[in-house]
Amino acid sequence: MVSLSPNLKAKLAQPLKIGSFEVKSRVLQSPLSGVTDMVFRRLVRRYAPESMMYTEMVNATGLHYVKQLPKIMEVDPNERPISIQLFDCRPDFLAEAAVKAVAEGADTVDINMGCPVNKITKNGGGSSLLRQPEVAEAIVREVVKAVDVPVTVKTRIGWSDKEITILDFAKRMEDAGAKMITVHGRTRAQGYNGNARWEWIARVKEVLSIPIIGNGDIFSVEAAVKCLEQTNADGVMCSRGTLGYPFLVGEIDYFLKTGEILSPPTPIQRLECAREHLQALWNYKGDRGVRQARKHMTWYAKGFAGAADLRGQLSVIETVDQGLAMIDRVIEQLANGYEPELEIESGESLGTLVAT
Image (cartoon, helix red, strand yellow):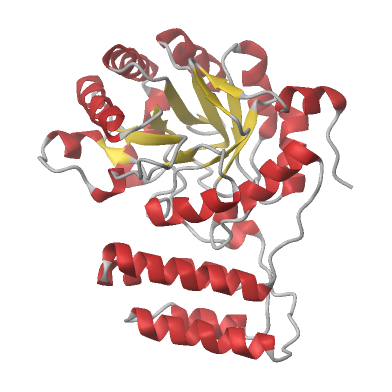
């Protein structure tokens, strides 16, 4: 049985204060490269209307050289609270990008200092900043000076097991003006392998006064509660657990607010959500949206009779109508009596998605 300790329950009943900005939920949707576009965020927000959402990470250098803002930076004026995440290693470019982010409607600006992917780190961004704390500090100071919304940081516990530097690094970010830090409990070298080491999140929480958000291995309500209990973090951020399951943030949020666990969606409900997701991506991005939808559709197709076959078919769809027809056929089969099979795979098997 999942339960909250009285002290934790009292703490989580209060709004999350990020500098001058308040969020009425302690559960956040992580920025995910190639995933958290406006279509995906709308689905998550349906079940978690008060949670903070994040855009995909935006390259500040790229933003400096274009006249038109990239589509990944687009936000719905009604989708608040919303944060735009930026990455780079140039303080001046990041400050310039932050001004544009605020003009687009960002309630906070998040700086990515945790992405482990080579194409990001080799250019000095993402988790490579863990090895350049002076640069990271300068970035936060410049961005804080440039905008009047809270500036936050998402990072990891260190570069490798031999370079776990999060305690000093996080303190530097706080001193530079960061109003919240999200800590993914893995090193850059780990990527998404092994277990998240929540004990380091707890240690960061002990030495900082700003809110600390726990991230890593939050695949269920039970995992979220364990993370909060073990770390004393001020909230949790869901990443890969929401792939093909935009219900998760809302499920955790509901439990933290009521102490009750919602019934999980049925396979048919999940497929209906997949159908809506596919149609919305087509409406928003056209053929490119259909290509992007392939991975989403395979994430939805788990945990029911015929899921493996459907995954294979959806991974190569060429048109929206083709995908919709495939999903509709399986929905009809399930509605006519197919018994669900226990085909659900663990969160660690969800692939190599860039969780930024």
